[in-house]
Length: 323
Image (cartoon, rainbow, N blue to C red; front, side, top):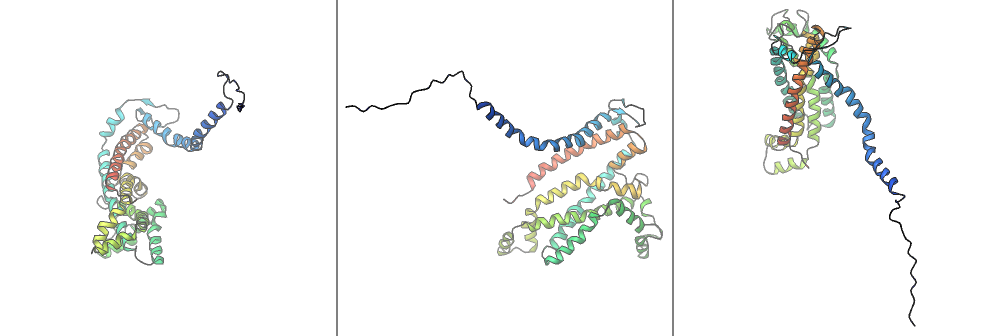
């Protein structure tokens, strides 16, 4: 007698009927893909409104002539603003002063803070905190307040710094630092560098804290002295921080000096202390020439953009990341 196996009846499924859950699943997948962009939407809106909208307006004003007088409209003049900028008598001195501030800020942003951070790295923790606080105090002071303090210290005849240097025979009694073409931009550079010291020292101290001490132990076993440890271990391990501060100093040194130029010298004497940012400020608000200001802003935006790309390429080649 043969066994009989029962099979469930087959239900016919029409191929033309759509699946009921296909559309909800596609909607859920689309929602999951869009969710990150929805979280980013407020930030993107702010960036578009506060960064790219003014950028487009600046590019358009660079091709126009406008005095910002109420009731007037910008007049299209093409590239004439760029031609006038290159022939302006204050343009070349401002570029040279910008180069002076950029190169002069590098020791205050990189070399001196690195030496200070290394010198205080091996002291006890309490003393290290005190040193870091003392270094960082100038950074948190408002630039206008700092300028006012140094204006009082360097006042002709009555300033403390003026009296001290005249007593030492360095300068004549009653010398005016901010009207001397040779001393003015040097004093502004020293003030800007003094303000930058604390920020760079804190970054270097944090970078040194993250260096693995086993590298120093291995170097000591190989007979390396303090200098060789600094050169072969410390510098490569903190090279990303060094490149970061070099990039910041090169790109932002002109902005850091703007407040001190505005308060202490107003670009004088004879344009010896002005830089490109203060020159743009004068074009816009002293000469009421928005087109010339926008042309200068556009030109230096392109220049600093190219410089930033070159620094990024140098960073990828020179910086060492310990994984």
